[in-house]
Length: 288
Image (cartoon, rainbow, N blue to C red; front, side):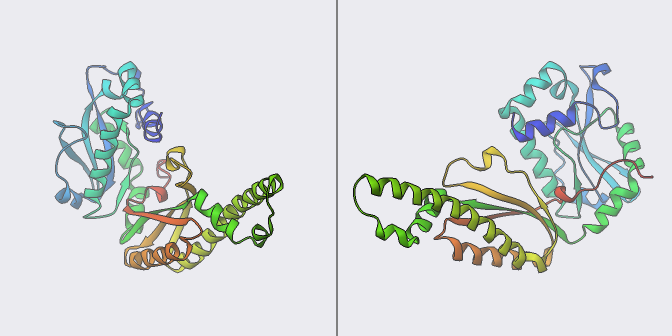
């Protein structure tokens, strides 16, 4: 199952209001939550729900609103739901639409994104959930004003990096011919491969130190198998960075310099964003 599928499966296993879908009417609907934000985000939303024909609506509470839509319960729970969550052709459009709604909302104000597949038994249950976490959520949204999340991945082109470090090894020029050369060159290639990964770790530390004045918070992220489709595109480090929006240019300029300086050694940084600050979201246990 894909990472999005695992996230959605975990979210849909039980309603977020604590009740179980098991006792609900399988022919009925439930509430799908995209995000929480200030009510003003309604102006930047297109009004469409998760899938064609589903309408988006707001569940307001004071200075807070939940961006939601109704979805068929059977799409997300029970045997049909299990099949859907395991089917990337069904789930991927949901994940893309979910992200699109978040991006629309964050054009107007900070958002607290919820995982794909966050469900509630009813609008009333969602309203109660919001009320129990009101201070926690509004506090987070206030803190995120003029801030944005960026994802940075350090990519290693393993064949290119190995060749770079092998060529830099003075022992290569001293190799003779024949079988002995083959064995020694194989040994040097192994050492060059190891050195390329050590150099990648050191380069990452140097980059993070250079970015430190612009970065408020950093969270290491999991490296997933699909991040590294082939030897020339291996993700060796992945971080989420939180920064003030006005520092975006400094971030991108530093990454451009890094990529120019390390291209020959097979290292590149891929930066994507800005994203809603999901990596820095608060614990959503009820307010005390």
